[in-house]
Length: 98
Image (cartoon, rainbow, N blue to C red; front, side, top):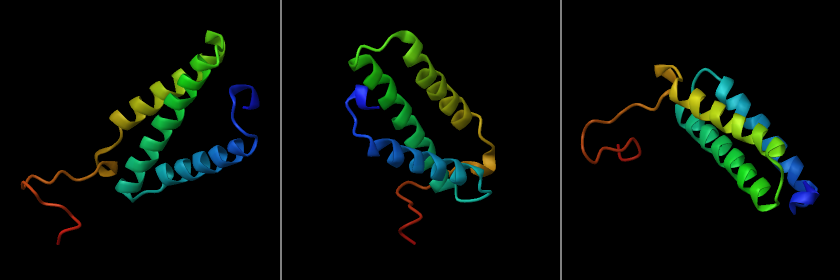
């Protein structure tokens, strides 16, 4: 990570975020948290891709991040219906404005 320009403690922060994200995705409920976890994984992997490109890394170092980004998008797209956020059909309805 230091050759990419990040401090060493950044590895710990990313590791904790990834573990928490996996735990949230494996829990049976909490669809809103799952959306946030998917978004976090998407931003982490896309950030990793752009970091490697900016650092001039060879394609072999970019490919794992690209593969994980594709898996995150595929997993998000094909997730079961009970893990999706409910669709509110009424215009202007928000679950926070009860």
